[in-house]
Amino acid sequence: MSDAPLIKRGSELVLKIESLAYGGMGLARESNFVIFVKQAIPGQKVLVRVYKKRRGYAEARVIKLLNESPNAIDVCCNHYWICSKLQSLSYSEQLKEKSAQVEDAFNRIGGFHDFKLEKVRPAKNIYHYRNKMEFTFSPNRWVLASEPEGVDRSFALGLHIPGRFDKILDIKNCHIQPEIGNKILSLTREVCLKHSELRPYDPRSHIGFLRFLMIRYGINTGNLMVNLVTSYHDINKISPLTDALLENFPEITSLVNNVNTRKADVAFGEYETLLFGESFIREKIDDLTFEISANSFFQTNTFQGEILYEEVKNLIGLKGDEIVYDLYCGTGTIALFLSKNAKTVYGFEVIRSALDDAEKNADINDISNVHFIKANLDTYFKSGQLPKRIPKPDVIVVDPPRAGLHKDMSSYLPKLKAKKIVYISCNPTTQARDAKILFENGYEITRSVMVDMFPHTPHIEMVLLFSK
Image (cartoon, rainbow, N blue to C red; front, side, top):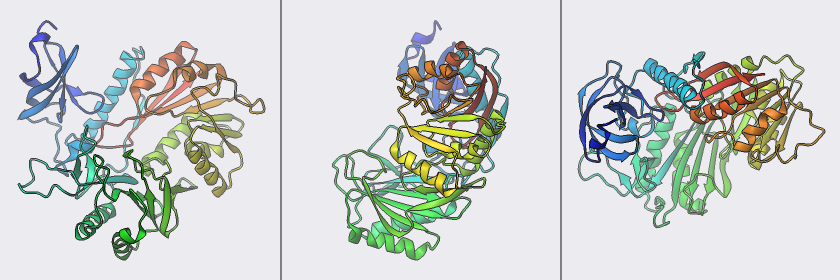
């Protein structure tokens, strides 16, 4: 640690990358001082330049690769570092690194010094697995160093450069979405470049028409939705693009136009116009059918989503007489999945549109033993809003946002006195923090499973079973 002050912004160092840090950066040490390195993988020896120095750590980027990692593999695309980040690391090593990150979080943050991940469920498909992709139109194209000089910077259709709200990398081919999505992407770009009125929206000046191209796939049904998000309503202006899409892709079962007139850079429209087909796609999980609208939440990896729900069901071991609470239930997928093995399931969610989708999907599947309740779970139970007619739970399933449980929710959860709590999380650091609170209130971690939902990315999905 004594050498740490010698490291400053602009310092150049030769480092050996030891492991992956949570979030996907390479982790190295110089005299026990931690340095996170962008676009580096374990096993590489690299020359780096420090661009940020903080108390306790620094961040750096690779200037030159000196020795390649033995676990490096060929990549499919030249822009993987923007979205997938881990594509240059073999899949088996990705799983090992993610497992190590989980165990480190529970040892270091949760204080579970003997925690060992019990089970890992690898992905069935490591490419073409996403059932939803969202691409941004922009007049401010980010040009890669590998691209030729003189590239037109006035149009892009692709993904955000990390840390830049106004710069978009033009994407020709995305390897984690189904192949038809790349064909739709290419045709959309081609049509827009031919029609000057199809002008991309500029988030700085707030001028322009086209904002987002969203594509949703029914992996098990073959349904296909294209959602064009515009800054205002003009069916005539958008018709060259919609006509071309329908003419070239008979697979499209839903074509909608969401209108977002606000400055907020989101693909969620204030209102929607149905242009073709139905306003939703259908997807199947196990023997359940779900209707998914443009703005509905649904697990973005259908195959791994089904594995996740199976693991939840297996961990609980329902016998048929249990009362189950599904907290942060969203559109009710888990609640409906568990319903046939439980007496009654109660789903709690604050977003009204999500509850509407949940109730609709219960009707579609003729499920009557699931009830959905609008509830802000930060305060709902603590403030005594739970109706007395609703029985106390035998089992609780909780799947909170990335930030984890609100402190009032995590402290109140044990007071519901459920025999089992299943905690699903996409952030093992906040899950480890909350697990410590549950442990202090009499619950022990009895099972742990990692389900790899997003190969080639740093994202981690964890399932824990807590028992009294």
